[in-house]
Length: 336
Image 1: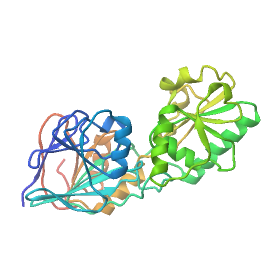
Image 2: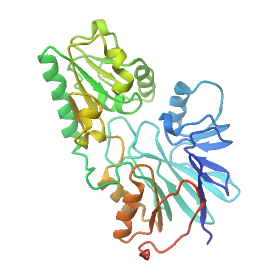
Image 3: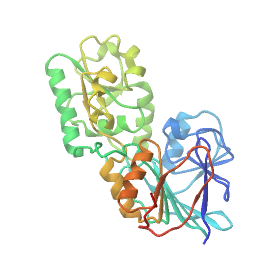
Image 4: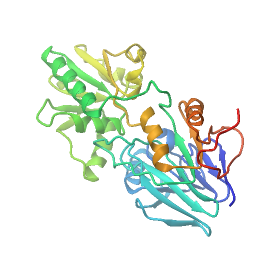
């Protein structure tokens, strides 16, 4: 059995099939696992899920050839390679990419989350011989609290701010986190205002069947008595300059860092993430049972080292050189 060849060139490239995964620049043929801006490019041909195609239409201007691949449907990519998309649990439409060829099977997770969210499909990772996984929170200190606990803390922050005559402002990225937090807010609680970019994206969620508490577009002169959701401070300060009586909170997995409130210049920070935390990363490896593992993004080297300590064949994926991903024994130790 041969090995998979994967190259890193501002995205993952598989020369045998001519396929790119999450390339940030335009390529002839690429899979876009989800519609966050750092994972999309203006490709000649794009393969993605149906919700991702809708979000791309909103975020990228111009015409492009989009091949919509339903979850779980296996299709031929080349004469000897097939592709299947599986829900990644990260945001609406996010996908894991499963490839099958004479080299065996390969799973690329893209950004993912095993914990069940309120505004994304449930993650469903298949088994694979080779696993390429994102490791944003690949250190042991990144353990998210229970989702219900984080949501309750956010709601409490909003209620207490309003009771003090302040406008609660929640810093959330427009795609994914905004919709997750909006879905968590009390449907009979205070009304919500959204940043204009988040408004357009939330309407797409509604088209895909998601329902949210009442919301309207942000109006600084009518914001009293509302919860405001907008992008983090470096994007949103101009929008908020007419809200002197406000309390701000960052909603992010990085809230686990002690300096989060200082770094983001906010009053509070709540650890609610759309990425896998450290226990989820370990759990994914157990679910997939790969023979070889490559880690990408975040604490890739540190997490690969953790996996090797646990007996897995794991390395961080290099960014310069072509790499061979051989199919080795699933628990083989790597010599020191």
